[in-house]
Length: 370
Image (cartoon, rainbow, N blue to C red):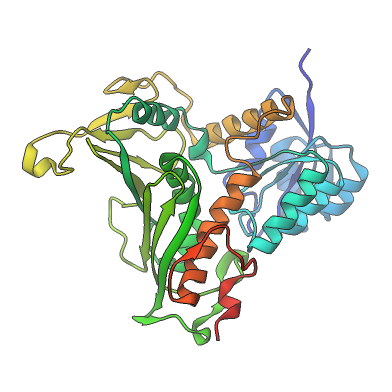
């Protein structure tokens, strides 16, 4: 008989809540039993207990971790100012983790979180649900089969709404960088970037406390270029209030024989353009949809919601817990690499030129502006 994992859920109503339904996703699975929830907000805690069916509820997550014998903890709040402390507390309690993104506020916190998990041989999966999509796996296979030739560059933009620039870089850019790393086939090794505020280069005077617990933040316009260890070039940009409808929030992969595009999300269909000019207006070539079954094939998978993406990610985490030889498809190491790419934008801006990754500076670069 398969093991049933005892799960604790951490939320914080009004300060990141329960993310994008992380609590209900982990509660819905036959492999899990949510035995306790923790939330400092009375009404939010009561509602979460009802949603998940948890027998116990706590105002303080540390009390929950101390009193309950848990296998897995779901760290649900979107706000990231508590993520580091929550991860450490879960690690000290010997719990594996599934958590809402982004990872941590800076590389100091990220490094310490990973050390604590490694010391106890614990696994962490993070909710970049695109990484668990069978559509992504199919598109990577198409690249392997030379459908767009050699990958030359990968481009992505955020949502470019009121959060455009630095906040977009953190909140939506983290999804873009996850996909960018997948398509580039490795880690970024350098970054050259600029950050602007109302048309001028960001200075110390522009740095404010960011929304959603991000920490020191600036810029309403960021431009970044990355070099990957595979030789692929990556580009990311975001500018405040420049988003369109439909949105440009997606990743495009440019190869020597054609182009692919995939938007962030679980089971979102991709597209492929088999055109080496990258210009269907000139050639008359047509974009073709890509599903998990391949090019121009109907999608056989019926479970396609955000909830289903969480379930796929948690199933992957459980498989990794049961197999010490594998890390989750989006693990703490992937989360660290994504955080490096975000921090590198501000460090390159601070230094006025390219910086190597991993970064030497582990603190938030915006706190070091002179």
